[in-house]
Image (cartoon, rainbow, N blue to C red):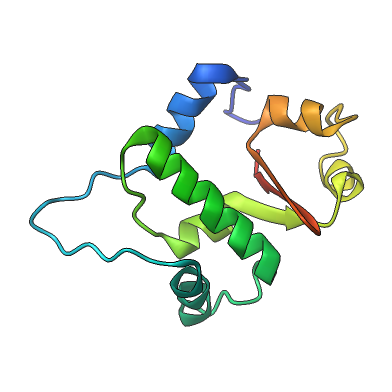
Amino acid sequence: MTNYTEVQLSGAELDTYIAARFSKPVSSAGVVKTLNVHDFRQAFIDYNRGEQFTYNALTALFEWLEELAEDTGTPYELDVIALCCEFTEYDNLAEVQANYSGTELESIDDLQDHTTVIEFDGGIIIQDF
């Protein structure tokens, strides 16, 4: 028995949850470095997580985080380990379905009802649920 209660969010509620989860306030007293996609990929290598995601997946994850920061107006503070713990790359929906066999995932739309889905050429990334 788990202590977790399943809550499904959608629309603005989901956007607000994601923004709160991944946006950390940046102190004006600190130093902020703006990363490009190359720096982002290099950060994963520096943390010995270079094999966690493929090249294309890291590009898609970077673009998604960049868009999230623009939409919320809050810079994202890079946390490589948190991203590796919270997101998983899959080759296709069938692979997700096999990993989440107890759920009724018949399509990408069904999956998007449960979690964040980042589609890219060569696969998908989902926020683990």
